[in-house]
Image (cartoon, rainbow, N blue to C red; front, side, top):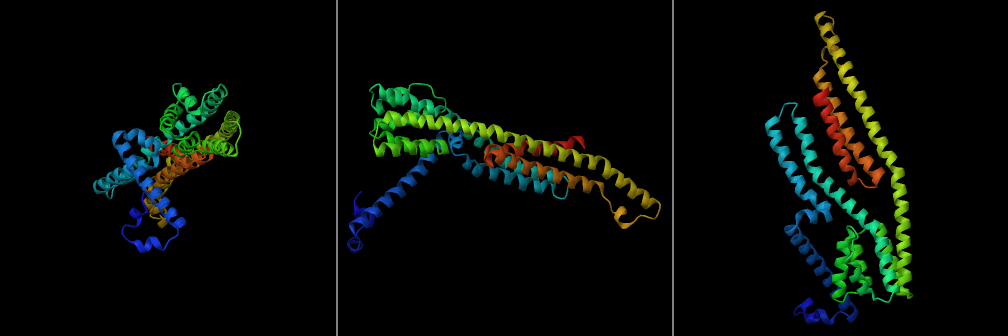
Length: 329
């Protein structure tokens, strides 16, 4: 790109900057245009295959689901304003807004988990082929014909980019940008830094494969230990739901009957006389739904290390609370 294209016809601006500053400005402009082109690529990919694109970028699902939830909310409010059914409208508006993101976040989590599982095998295969005398582009081209689960497509993308002259290290860095997880970023950083320092690439790849496998084993062990807290979150919610369910089905009717008896005897106090069982039952339902939603987020954060992963738990627990108060109590 010519410097003149950056400044146009303003020669005095070009003359007032050093060559190093002009180079930095040019690099900055190139990076900006690359980022803009990436956004256009994402839009084109979404138009071509929206389901696959949203599985890569699940946060964009909120852009589609939240407006649908708001439309459902406003339409429901106009139809049910002033009636108890308005609670159901609000609950299902929230569920409509978070269910598609919960599905896409779960799919991305499963996909990245599969990629991390196959990453040590991929690096070890590349290392063995490099020891056998194949160049890195040729080794990647060979393993791209194999089966590595969700990693297969990423290997094919690396193979295609290397066929156009991209270096092995740069292809790995692009891969780490597309699938940015701690294990992948750690492995790619280890390979690229070791390659810059010099040394046998095969040994570096094997060390990275061993490191990725050990980190994944530790992560799997940690996840297994933390799943106990997911179970605890579910159990505590069901205990809470049982308690407020018993209060609603036994205490509230008893208080309502006591209020009626006091009023008929002419000695009802203002507190007993003003007791509305429907109001307190509705309050208990609100409590159960909110508790279920928040318990799900806590379960996701503690069990899987992400609040977004807790959305699926929130959906389940919120629906359980709603069904208990709608069909049971």
